Length: 174
Image 1: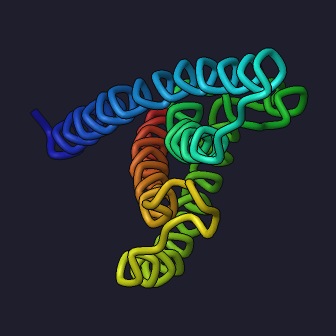
Image 2: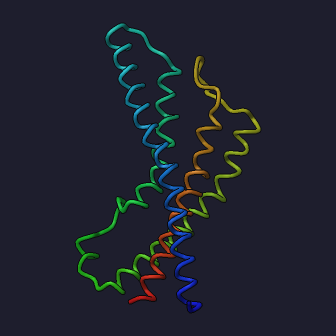
Image 3: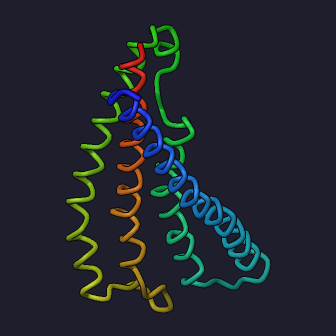
């Protein structure tokens, strides 16, 4: 087996391993969507049906939205559900598509790395201060909500790395 073929096989296995992790973690996002539906329906029923409200339950909605958006982004990228101008992209030759995908993946890696770097301190301050809700009866762990920022972007960075490996492989093959 040639060195190029061996590198391509390793890259493909690494991309598949990243995809597997993103799929598994993405399933947590799907669970959060289900939980959000139950929490929101309960809040509406209690508020309008029984005139009962809970700050904690309302804040739980935000705590569930964070993993949905931040973990779900990598999952959406993994399954090709991200935003792209397909009307233009579809008409391009394979080599041009691979080059566009490579450029987009590298830009995505850069943006994800910047967000991770900028958010660590933000999350760290929240953790050190044991930040919680400013509202009486609110959720005490606000830092956990903020921690999804670097975690979600790390997952997104990993998926962009897998997309980079695939785009490079496609460029070599074209």
